[in-house]
Image (cartoon, rainbow, N blue to C red; front, side, top):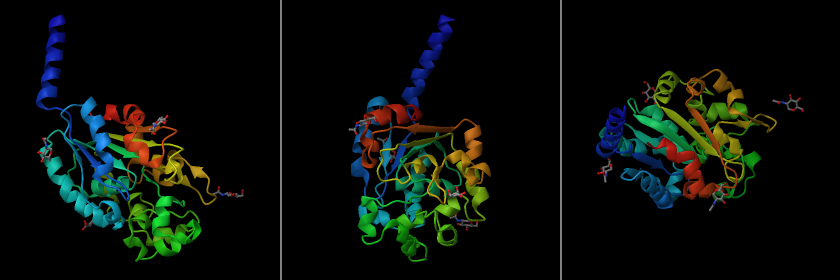
Length: 287
Ligand SMILES: *[C@@H]1O[C@H](CO)[C@@H](O)[C@H](O)[C@H]1NC(C)=O
Ligand SMILES: *[C@@H]1O[C@H](CO)[C@@H](O)[C@H](O)[C@H]1NC(C)=O
Ligand SMILES: *[C@@H]1O[C@H](CO)[C@@H](O)[C@H](O)[C@H]1NC(C)=O
Ligand SMILES: *[C@@H]1O[C@H](CO)[C@@H](O)[C@H](O)[C@H]1NC(C)=O
């Protein structure tokens, strides 16, 4: 018994030394870049020494307003070599708008090897709210008017419009949105079967968000919840695309592989530098 135990411990130690932890790829959000993720990198190397952490240095700051499919193209080229050299797979940590970039990446990488897909306060079901972020782009419009700018082919060339989800303009959203509505299977795309398979290829989906975020609106969008036409939040499991299992979320959930981690008291730009958030919601998924 003892001998078996010692062998077991030795082989674990050997495994950690030889194989180490899976590499981590971080995808940044709107108006930021690698600089904002230095602290997260430090947390990871303190708890998981030797982890190869890459924060992709593309579409930083103002360039993060570029259309999301275009960003996905760029990120794919950067991420592919990391995936290919990681025989045992990688983890993704995707912050805010970066979560939507990661959705597009997963959909379009035929043989991805992503283990944990961690969405850090990401507007996964869309955004409908005025925030300081938005005011930089649409200075004069109040939220009820943003759809006029977003829901046409020019608007869709701005990243925010790719996930602007006005609950009072359903028909226009479904007709003009070229990104989120497709990925969430709200409007029809022939690619959905393939995308669903790839989405199901991940091992764990970790959804992190909280009521004091202040930017993601409604904040439950970080957990796949969203407003109905009365601006009442409908949670993930009551969403049509969940119940119809359009893109695989329900299957993943029934497999026991959807984790929600809600942390109050964290403002949007602090998610990646808050040690409590890291300890409670991220650390254990990075092995
Ligand atoms: C981390 O991974 C990248 C991409 O696979 C590789 O180019 C780089 O050499 C690695 N760094 C270390 C320190 O292993
Ligand atoms: C959708 O599928 C078509 C046909 O296979 C392919 O050419 C296209 O690149 C796919 N688009 C995306 C965004 O995956
Ligand atoms: C919205 O509210 C009205 C009035 O309270 C109600 O009749 C209607 O069913 C609600 N719609 C939804 C989608 O919940
Ligand atoms: C980190 O998150 C905890 C948990 O909600 C919160 O109490 C704390 O104020 C946060 N710290 C910072 C620096 O934002």
